[in-house]
Length: 329
Image 1 (cartoon, rainbow, N blue to C red):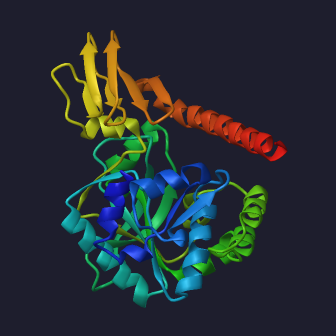
Image 2 (image 1 turned 45 degrees about the horizontal axis):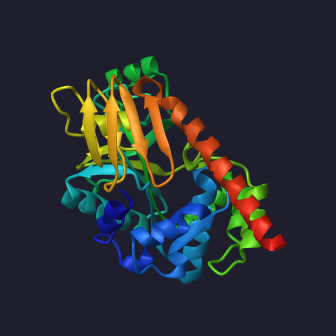
Image 3 (image 1 turned 180 degrees about the vertical axis):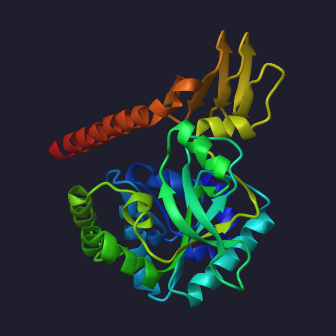
């Protein structure tokens, strides 16, 4: 997904203008996946602090290179259908933010009451006379209960929130300084060359808060552009299952080689060079990377974030232990 997202944005801006923020333990893996990146293009976070701090970190590095830049903030795990239309929508949003002190987010018409997505309530009145499919945002709601999501859809006044935000660097910094002043003060002082120990210190003292909750729910001048492309948030395994090709038993094998025996309604996503043999599963997620295997009921995927946090904490402790042992030799 990372390679696909990177290639997609190479159609929107120069390759050297793309910055990836990831956990520090994945920096080398990112560089292996996307070759030829400059040092400043991969920023490693020492720990998770949600999206607001990581966006602020990237914004600080961008400001050092071009204080007049326009910025697109996007997750790397989205499925996009209709990339030409995606590029057109991004170009329209960039034109709007280049000439207006506003924030543009991208919304998608919902077709099911999915509790894994955020929702944007919009005004039917257009935000600008000369902007197609652009509406003023009324409210943001982060991952509502299913029944509430069902009510949202019934009104016809809500989009799914893709988590893609477009704004000028000036607008971004002003929003942080107004709504997240502590994050702004500590992160905007960082540079690409800032020593890791100083970055670690900033993160250790930072609050954990999302862009949605910390800024978007409070900011003025936020507009939503209705996407003309198809979209699915693959952060949700259920969404990946929904967009995958499935066999007669309802199994979706997204990656990897698999042998399935008496298996139904199961999603399989393992590295391309791995082979997995499964028997007797019904309604499961089976996923793996180079060193971790996940087997979880699809109906309980909301627990995966906790599982991932536990694994990440374990790996960080192991890394710290190895570094201490190496230093003592």
